[in-house]
Image (cartoon, rainbow, N blue to C red):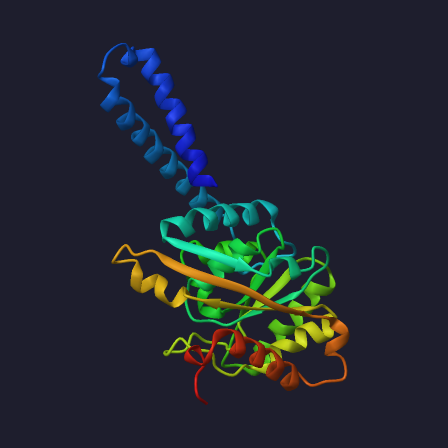
Length: 277
């Protein structure tokens, strides 16, 4: 984890300074060493942040990204593993062993918080998941450029023609073995933070690319942002429910796929987390 590495490096540097200055020859080191280590830690964090800004500044989001950039992917994974403890999120994962170790897949999950992609990127690190995201996220500070470099695809949810182009692009990404695709089939974070029925068009991605669908649910992420100002800990449960093989997707409609996955998620989430529609 990046934060842990920076902290350890700061302690080492503080120790070197302490030895060079003779701090350990008296009791002054009891307060001086922690203060020097903290100073080094803050400087190292600032340098890491500046490096991140430089990386993002170099990204041209108007130029199509042809591949998943390994360096940016590594940076995102480091940021995610650092952010989760800072946000005081404790993620319990069940069923991760069901996920294919080889080959691409379509990852689908319920959506109830801005923290959802962060949790999923952390849990599925190593699987190169690129999310479908609303087009407005392109302008998000740091997030937009980093998403672009790991092949995340922007979708215009109000324009069916443009949305279709995004779906076709995602099919190509899977067929060309560039990344797995992650999607929240509800399309929006609903005001009640409960599970709502899906937009079935996204399941055409798995059908056309002939890849499995990894079905999972998230519980607890809706409490992350309300808990932050109170400095409260948040327990999050990520359950991998089922992996639907490509053979099971042939000869049926996307609406039928959507109903099957919705029923799986609803059963796991419980009636208190499912909207009455």
